[in-house]
Amino acid sequence: MAFGAGRVIAPYRQPGLRARAYMHVRWWICPFDRVLPLVPDEGRVLDVGCGSGLWLTYLALERPKLSLHGIDPDERKLALAGTSTAGSLELRQGSIADVPAASFDTITILDVLYLVPDEVKADMLRACYGALTAGGTLVVKDADTRPWWKYAPTALEELLAVHVMRITLGRPRFQSLDALRAAIASAGFLEVEATRIDRGYLHPHVLVRARKPRRGSWLT
Image 1 (tube, rainbow, N blue to C red):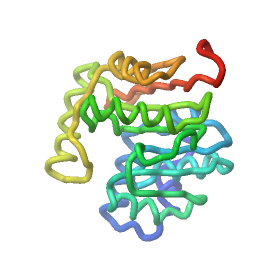
Image 2 (cartoon, rainbow, N blue to C red; image 1 turned 180 degrees about the vertical axis):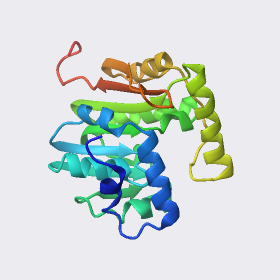
Image 3 (cartoon, rainbow, N blue to C red; image 1 turned 30 degrees about the vertical axis):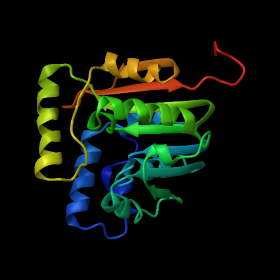
Image 4 (cartoon, rainbow, N blue to C red; image 1 turned 90 degrees about the horizontal axis):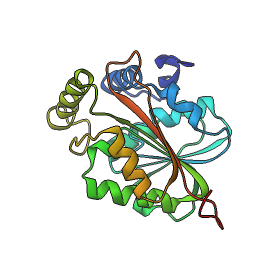
């Protein structure tokens, strides 16, 4: 990775041992550097389910010209995100449904969609479509159900995070990469490109990029 965990966590003002440990683990298990190339150098970016703001902080360090925004329903994690001094992060509590139409050039969703039911997922993706400007980009990082030897421990880990440790809201409902790609296409997105980014990682990370059509064209 371009930045180590220490440098990304350093901008947080006294996060505490528990939060610091959580962010170190999050940084270690998620290939943020493999998602980064899909984010432009300039424009307005919204991270849906921004949580502690680790991804936004990383973007602030790597993409200083971006206007960075985050939204999340978890007040506790937003409070932690608000202590990051990297750039000027605009944070709000709520859901993507609360975001005005055509507000952002890029929307990212990292490790969120597997925590919501299919019908809610469909609503979220349609809301993302509406919140993007014409020609805007959606970037989704999620976990696949294959290979089984990566999926099984990931599913167990998420069950513990939700039901035992209670550090994550929602209920894990993993789906295949093909199903995720189909759900994004069903929301109206074009040029839906999916790839695996889990080489060297213990978790079955996958990445999908899609584009909202430009005005005046149904082909591009």
